[in-house]
Length: 192
Ligand SMILES: N[C@@H](CCC(=O)N[C@@H](CS)C(=O)NCC(=O)O)C(=O)O
Image (tube, rainbow, N blue to C red; front, side):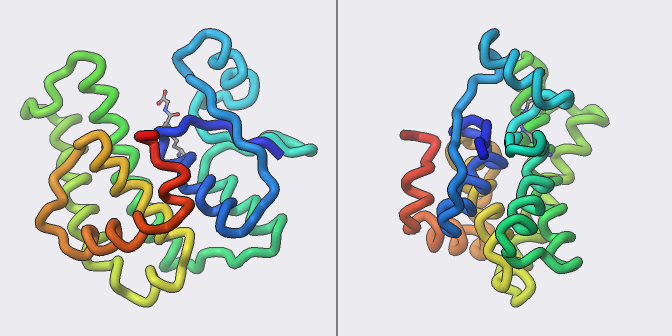
């Protein structure tokens, strides 16, 4: 199996850390989705034109959430319960809005403008981070390694790209500090 992605994507990184922790024999290939040659590979396998995607002997699996479920099935790893799925949805919502803001910024838009689209993203980012700050010390969260990894990858990406102020959110800061000691967090650091 081959996991395609980029070293900077938090969605890809969460899967790389998860595979590493469980010693899953998955090859990783980094691609640059804005490079002409690599984009052909992306287009061939994922109509949504997003990373990550996984190529297995049987088929291509697109989207980090689906890839995680596929790996959990394939390697008999625990699935998330419904409360944990909801937390993952919250992490993803925050991550998706930050991606939109980053792309808006790179496209030359004023992402701080008082307009509906950016107001909605900013509201979602602020509220989901505040919510996750409270949830990240609960048993529901702490009993799920995939959630812990996913939140760590989001927070470290926020810090790496300077995307949001989390300096007042102590739960999130503690989570970041705990996970950044992990060998796999160091090995997948987007800065290196
Ligand atoms: N729901 C997707 C989101 C993946 C995603 O947004 N990936 C970004 C990179 S971090 C991407 O490929 N963006 C390309 C684009 O938006 O055109 C997942 O969980 O895999």
